[in-house]
Structures are given as C-alpha cells and as structure tokens.
Image (cartoon, rainbow, N blue to C red; front, side, top):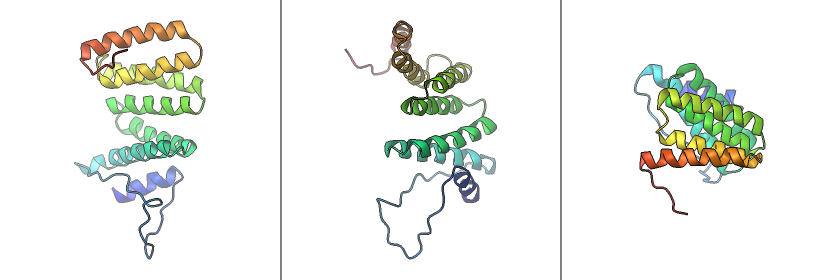
Length: 171
C-alpha cells in the first residue's frame, strides 16, 4: 500500500517530507489517515480514500487548487477501480462542491448530474449521499440565479428527507 500511495501522491503533485532529524511540528506534519486494505487488490482504493481525506484537509486549509488536483486524482482511481460503487457518486459530488467554491459552476453542474446518476444506479434516490448531492446542486442553482429550479429541487429534497427520517433542522 505504501508504494502505491506514494505513487498516487506524487501523481497529484505532492512530495514526501523527510522526517529524519526533524522534530515533530503539528503545524507542518500531519497524519491524514491510517487505513488497512482488506485484500491486496484493495490497495489502490485505500490510496484513493487517503487522497479523499487529504483533499478534505486541504479544503479546510483553503488550499483549493491543491485540493482540486488531489481530488481529481482520487476520482480517477475510483472511476477505474470501483465504477459501480456509491463512493464514486460521493466523490463526484465532492469535486462538484469544490468546483462551486472556485466559481466553476459549469463543470460543477456536469459533475452533480453525473453524481446523481451514479447514486441513482448504486443507492437509489432515498440515501443520505443523494440528499447531500441534491442539496449541493440546489445551491448551485441558487448561485446561478435559477431560483425556480432550486425551489423545485428543494421540495424534492424535503420529500426524500422525510422518507429517510433524517434529522432535519426546523425553519
């Protein structure tokens, strides 16, 4: 797993920091995740999951261009290795969210639509990932001044949430 992860991190433009002889600095050094593959053929999916978590950390640090590159690399792995997984739909939605943060609404809309189709195939409509993706898409519609479409979509989201019995904040 280690070699495969290093290869993926390098492909995403990241480089290894040699820790030998350096004191631990929590502002500089950070463990992203510890994951164990359940089988040798799962190594690349573990690497993709770690890349996902790294991208989330980069977003929280407002390193959006870096996060974008890492998330796209992770997405390529998910598409190649687990095309029938609901995880792919979630990753598509995450990249769409990131595109919205960077003002890339046209690409984000394409990604949201792809994520919705993937989630319909793999989880069905009544799933928390679907709700999150639809909420992101509704926010994109509002940001691009398509209020009527956003309102219609928000009504559908509310209907799905009521069937999921999720904790829905009261207005």
